[in-house]
Length: 552
Image (cartoon, rainbow, N blue to C red; front, side, top):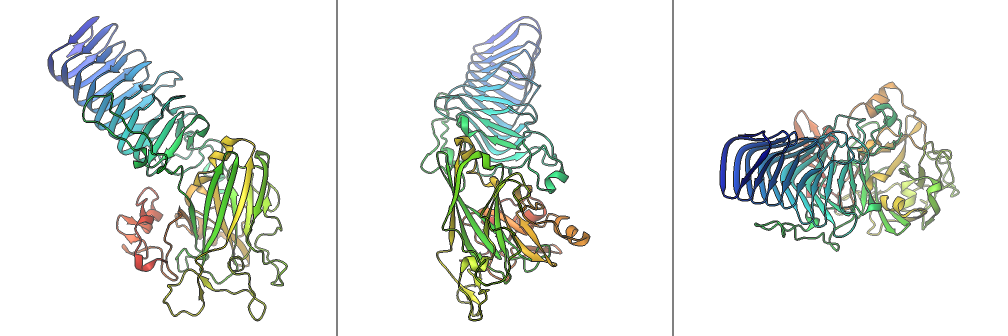
């Protein structure tokens, strides 16, 4: 059925259309005030559609024009909802349910969008934002993706907007991924603005898109992030269930009756654990307990406090550690200080420490030996001394395994502490917005410095593109060592949630040899080797330990 000519089709009863309902050309209108169904529907040209009752589209609803309107004031169910081109009047005032996919890809525009007014809801198992995208949401509106949202919002200011005031809107998705993960320079991938809660259990990692692969490998950080959570305008992030959403079975006024639970909703993970392997660029025992550090940021208006604890040392050589604050320059700060810092081995008659050649705790951007545009904190130069600043009988450093060997193990050189040493770093920012962004884990590049081949190498986390960074030491690899270190996805350092259980001494975190997996995290479908080979798979590997192979 095609509605081409000028005029209106108004339904107040029941209409069943077995073919496509096409609404096109100037002044053509379809208004449903009763019950209507169709195999598919397209709104094009200057066509206008309004639903006041119950509308069911078995296949696909297509809205494709710069001058059409699609307005839902009732209950609308469709297999797929595909919105392209962009118009000023594509508005959901009530309840839209997609059984397959909601896809949006507008033309270059600064005014056209998909709108959800106050109290309205969209529910879909899958969502794709495949280009220029504006979604404007009113107070207490809900966009719920029960499965995966895939985003490639490729220009600044495009994204998902909550209201400027009043109650928050919620964009909820089990997982949020980049639509084109192979694109390294795709511009902004997602922007979240306004009074909006982004509720998800898994968001693609933070990174910057306006640098080449070579620049990123050199440790350069760009200006265009893959996503922006604009805290200044009120955008916040929570877990999927933290949104506390309640959907009614009927109507639309009460379709979204929940509000995010402020008491249970974590702004960000409470802490971030960094686990290191000290045989970089060789694999070694691959137990990721040679140095274990936990970083816990807290915020009070403009004051950021970062507590760092040294939880475990499973190495036998001296290892230093530092932390780069991504995007932070000294000019951003009113002041910075350290309290109860880790003890330094220098001046203790323990020899020269050349792994981090400075006596400073805070290194401003480009202040030697810092060769980046970000501030760097020198945490310690010897992990064993930081854990236990007591000399041996012959005046050396105790090289025990701290908190890595099973407690009932008979191994001689082991020690334990239930209260690991901590250091606290305080930063007073000039602007609250800048301070607020530092609650996210991707602003912390924590790394160790370990001896190798007569020099020192930095070991950075594989996440966020930091693996090949060199911050306080020059690169000293030969061709073979460089390829071994950087030529594959194999990580020597990982960042996980603060309660992560790292492997016991001499137990691999996970290996895959000829298709047979072994180690502390090797549950099929949730295994570390699967994630290490492809970061898009087994993303929850760290939640599936073999309890007998991890430190308790």
